[in-house]
Length: 109
Image 1 (tube, one colour):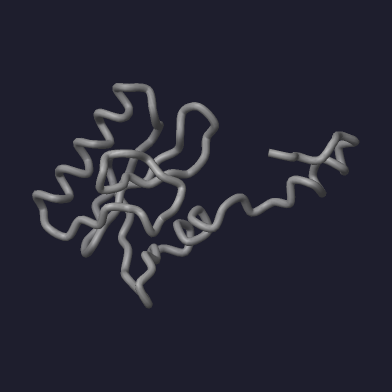
Image 2 (cartoon, helix red, strand yellow):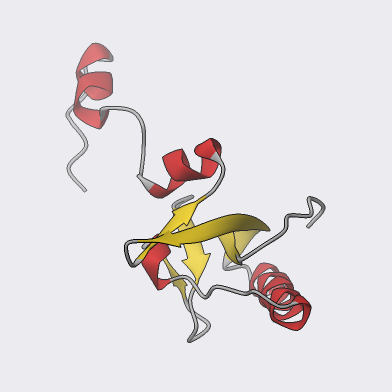
């Protein structure tokens, strides 16, 4: 993890199995909902997040874990960076449209 950010942070990555965006939760699991992410505010808590990411990579669960700055707004976890807000909202393409353009069946799962 190279990039340093300040303020409250969460750890994000992509699942090795399917590439989905996930966030490290307080119970040590990786979840797709950013609101379930464990928020770290101290240097020790941030170091623990990073260590959790290293262990998950070693266990072949995720790829490319990294910290992102967040803020809590109206009880929701909101990434500070625009790129990360896009990642938390899911794929930015219409699977059905893309599949039809290629002459394939629409994505159903």
